[in-house]
Amino acid sequence: VVLEMERSKGLRNEVGHNNCFLNVCIQTLWHLPPFHLIFNDSVHHYHHQQQQQQQTTTSTTTPTTTTTTTTATTPTTSTTAASSSQGTRADCVFCALHVIFSNYKFSEARVLPPDALRMALDAAFRQQNRFKLGSLDDAAETLDAILGYIHECSLPKPETGCSGCIAHKIFGVNIAEQVSCLRHGCKAQSEPLLQDSFSYYVNTVQLRHAAWEKPLFAFDELLNQVETQDVRECSNEKCKAPSPVSRAMLSE
Image (cartoon, rainbow, N blue to C red; front, side):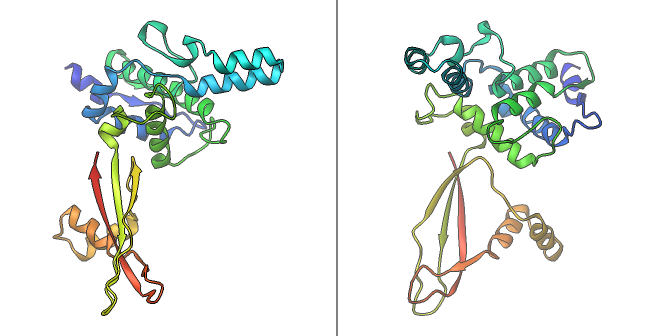
């Protein structure tokens, strides 16, 4: 009964709030058990972005050498780390998502407000002029931004290498891309290009067209059909013939 109540809960999208793209991301993450079960148990994280904002504000309002040096080199615990005992921050995407997931699990309301995450995204990406309150944004880009934020605040320091944060455990993929020339007498292959990503974008128009042409193909076969349509120049300077691009997705 409890599980059915969790599944039946919706997210509010009032006129003018334009929360449809964000609600899609929240529902995607909540209805993916491998993610939300691990995330619910992960409360410890770091507030890097909030710390940087405080440093900027302090340096601007009190530009004394002592204050600037102290703020930059002696970060306080409240601005660098967070746990369940310290409560949540209104400008932290990690904290906001925890609030919404808690509402999914414990609230008796059938329609939940996504406001906590909407305001946290607005605050976290204000300097990039992204995810402003009331504005429409792309759902795929928003999901990437949320996962990227979770990755960053899972590390003690922004420059620390990732040893398996939640975002990479569930969504992380390495994409290997290579151009292979089919021209007789050349057969050159480019150096494999490796990319670390949370998402893999496919042209949906091409995918639908492939499904219409090959109705018996499985989804992975349709993806392969679409990928073969991507053509680049041969990497051989003396050839430059149009050559197909091959890609391989490797789980982390």
